[in-house]
Length: 332
Image (cartoon, rainbow, N blue to C red; front, side, top):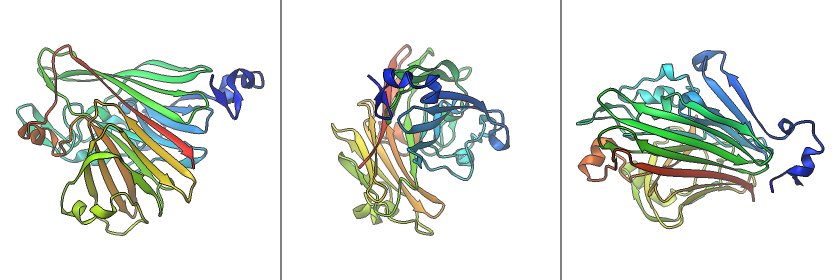
């Protein structure tokens, strides 16, 4: 049975006038700036976990906190309404607001691609597609948000992503479960990456990272130069150049961030259908962020690169695949 503040929910409900005193989903609409007009769902789960869900940004997760301590890195762009999306080249970076989970795909992630499947910008389109909500509910047992995000075009792919975001009332864990179905008439490339963006004060000097990988590869010379310190975060450094590491997953699919000075630990777990995890270490001033990015292929060079390397996944007509990621926060 769920509990809140050390008490079983059934007993806690005898002490409040409404469940909303403990756990709820607030439904809001942004009123100003680049986010104006976009829907926002704010989740309070009664266990110290609070987070924002953005239905108009593919049901991605923005700001998040645990017991008042911020978890996610938020960029200078803010999480803008999808109308501001720049799909060409690296325009994705103009509206990359960070947040706890940004979904990349569905037919490409990584650098832009121009190949036999057409032109696609950096990290794909799905994170800027508004969802059709099907469920928003809070019960004494759990909070559930569900909806469908469809990436499609005439004479092109028709991929339906059915997402559920759930958290047990009183817990410190949230789970994203995605079911992707090819509802088109031909096979479609399928590249999916979950861009989990962690920032200060969860990250700090002395923060360490644990990823039990089968293998680790540096993306480039910058990453190679920092290879021996890839699990240590350190303080912000002006002019730091990003370092990216490709982790091919072992049987233990998790990444854990521990910050003893804050007494906090975050663990990311992901499904067997996500055989790789990219570590984006970017500890510059103002861009002090650790990206943990489970993906369905270890190919980092986009759709064209994945095709050339023979590592481009496809989803056949009528075929379905399920991905899941969960984030658990606790005190140490």
